[in-house]
Length: 510
Image (cartoon, rainbow, N blue to C red; front, side):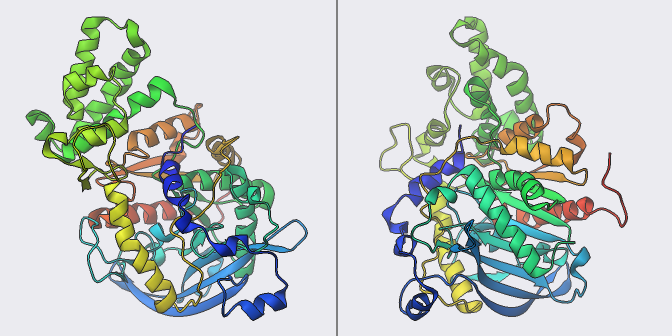
């Protein structure tokens, strides 16, 4: 089973630099913890700071209250075992919260904090970036005129060992937190407590997850129904993983080609007739070839007719920007690592994994793998100082605990991953529940065509397809970093929330 972004996070998160002494601290009495709080890196199990602000969205001023705080995770005996950090935005000029939508937002990894969508996508603050998403100085955040805060309140949640969230009981079993199903189970309990504390049980609720966070929210949709008796109105999958839906072998190889074509188009290395077309006119042609010709050809393996193999190789080269010779050398199945290195090899450049608009330079032009991920380096460059400044200084949440953009959550238990099937079951049992998928065309980790395949395979019966929708964007894994897509993607979210919020007194029935 592949969780593509998880591979990236594994490499980063397992670094000793991210290990926290607080995670391994022995259990302390409340009194002793209080004594040490000011001088050691200990997280408060339950805390809050509140600020007010306003942001202009769609030309209208939206006042809000923001709460940064922690809320405990309890074990089966009612003892605090961990605490999760969250940031909660509420529109403050709405007195009746009963009908006000609530968006519950997670990022992925596993092992990634909720920082990415928090200060770059849906919240009232966004990073100080240029129009294409590259870091600029001074670092920090600015108002987000596209935030969905005008139509919904939002809570951003950092799972255990991400952000400021930590295990507090040194005797706690890490397996309780670090696995596909364990993660979903404790987070469902946490969400239920948060909703109870904030009085949001009657609010329409929406789960938003990015990358591995899509596995998380897909699973949460059913876990909240079955274990917490909480039914959500919508699930948004941003740059989704496979959700446990198999696509190994030739299917996996074939699905990559439309992403290769999008990247080659952006980098201007396609044949002149294709390059002259708009991207959205090129991709349907490539998608049709992928499903109708490439997949059957790959299924024949080494027994494909030689003439047919040559024909298929020529088309792959035409759509990918690679040479026919290179395609044939790789048996018609060029792997992403090879593609990122090969596409611009003659220019001495590599393309980014999570966003192929970003370029890198390697020590040598030879080889099949890039030296580093150009896009991730750029993102860490801008996100790290901004989130620390915003939470600690602007919001005034004071702690010496390190904010982990990527935390130590490994080994992660990937066994029994059925989150796609769980999402289908949740939809079947809840006629209100709709799903929106958002993908960037230049994302090479969780490709847009892989996301379409996920949507197609989520419900083989086709009975739910009118409640499943897809939107693509001209950027990468975090499509919202590009200013044009920030506006469009938020509008798509805003419209989805409105459409998935039922009319008053509309019954949930088939």
